[in-house]
Image (tube, rainbow, N blue to C red; front, side, top):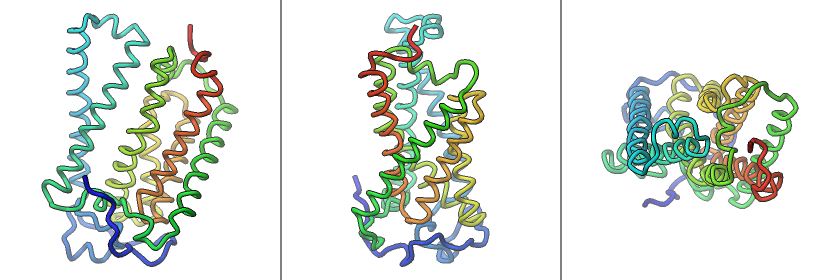
Length: 288
């Protein structure tokens, strides 16, 4: 597996770059030279469309495979539909399998097919290569994630919501909560940052300018979580803000590593507070 490329920094400045002219669907090497180094990815809108199709296929195929596996293991379809514990496990495994397929696609798209460095091509520049103070920037990112998570949690509790949310299916038993929290601090931040800040953001920023790229990518990030919060539009709006903050950090720092650390600490704070509030998952709020 490749490591983060050190090489020359994408840019000598650490401030939000100015907007740039729209880019073609498939940028050529000469056109890429018109953009900052961290936006010079060798894919465009057509590739993003293909990635969406691949992702949908990955979720569908993994779901079919899981249904077959559950049935072979003695779980009938009716039990799968009406057992929160079984359904939560199904959704978690489906997410893991599809996420691994997405990572595999990214590897094929960069390293295997194009010969490009896997991590650097997806925006994972090291802090050293950007002439940034590694400890200070990492500390800022972690602190930002914790503060942002605490604020969003407080605002979400203050606003409240009516009815049961789809995400509550994961909080019916200890196993489901633990697997969800484990996913939230391992695979989820890595894959989501690669998708939004590594793969989608550079194309959006080249096409519409950096500020619009930050906002639009953040909106897409928030809407991705909408199915889990169906009907709770205030909470969805808060996640849109979270996505914008993550993308802004990516734009200013010029590396996905910064937004990943922020995302990781954001989810990590949720994991820690959940463990504390539920007394080690022994007092779950939605247990019946």
